[in-house]
Every structure is written in C-alpha cells, then in structure tokens.
Length: 257
Image (cartoon, rainbow, N blue to C red; front, side):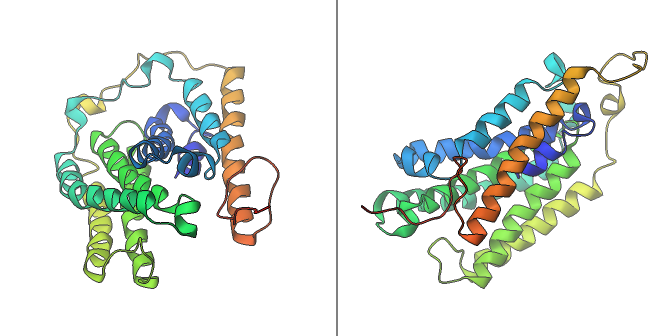
C-alpha cells in the first residue's frame, strides 16, 4: 500500500494527495497496534523497516502542495454511501484487530516473535483509516478506493486458502470481507461523478504554466522512489529468504547464540 501511494507521487503529486496520505496510514496503524499490544519492539522494530516509514514521512513533508495539502478536504466532497460502508465494516475490523492484539500479548510462537499478530491488527486499523480517507474524497481518491476495497478482499481470499492460520477469518467472515471489498469499489465507481459544484471548483487559483518544474519537485520524485525500492527489496528478501544488509526487517527466524 505504501509503495502504491508513493508511486502515485512520481507523476502529478498535487493531484494525488489521497495517495500520499494512504502511504502514511499503515505506519500509523502499526504504531497503534504496537502501543495497544505493549510489544513495540517486535511489532515496529523487527518488521517492517523503520527506514521505509522515515522515507515516507520525509516524502510527505516535501510534498509540493505545501500548505494546500489539506485544501481538497471539504464537507461537500464526502461520499456518504462509502462512509456508511466504512462505519459498518469498522465494527468487525476492530474486533479482528483487538483479537490479534490479544494474540500478540498472550501467544508464544514464531508468529508472535516476528510480530505477525501485531501486523494483522495494524491491517484492521489500516483498512478503516484508508476507508475513511476515501470517503472524504480528496484529490486522487479513486486509486485509494480500489486499494481500500482490495485489502479486505485479499484478506478474505487468504483466509479461504489458509483456514488453519490463527489470524484467518472464518468461512462466513471471509466471504463477507470479499463481498464488502467488491461492493466498496463498486459504490466508489458508481458514485464517482456524483459531485457538487463545489467539488468541481478549482482548488487553487489559476497560474501561468511554468516552463519547467521546480528542481525540488524532481528531488521529491527521487525521494518517493527510495521507499518503493526498499519495499521491493524487502519483499524479494522475504520471498527468497536471502538477508539483505540494509536494515530491512523480514519474517526470518531469530538467531540464537
């Protein structure tokens, strides 16, 4: 999710405010899960890497919209249908999150050692956060809507494929998650053109087109690529089991001496 949000900043970042915020939400969810589980080290330090979170925050601070970053957040832009779906889903998602927080606190196995239950709790918080963000429909919200629907659908599919996993949903809830995810995207696409005149009003005064983009915008794009590359390397490291010495965490077994 972070990689998708940052990748959206490479081109027209001022039109992808939602993507930038989406890239930050997982780290907030992870921090909340770490605090509530009272297991900050295993949840936030071991995996994922703090270097990716730091690069994401730096990218947000250097966003070219500057003080206009939150200007597209208006009451007139709220999609009440999507907001209702998020509120309904928040109840079981919070139950899922707190169940995994309890497992992180009480279970002693490899999953707890690697902070897996804390990550799953963060997942629940993240879906709620991204869903609320999409409901507000800031600039670039459509990409975020697809991600918000895809996350629970993937959780449902993974639960059907691996029902023996302690963090998997039951058959009924897995199907509900898939249906909700598909329905959320469908509602987002069906109501994408239902916008008030206030939404269609330019957010910023018209300016003369610049002959070339400012140099610092290019720097932002380069910085945005850094955490994307780190996420890619971390994923490859996790899948292959090969340790990459750049400070990235992974689901690798602890070394006993």
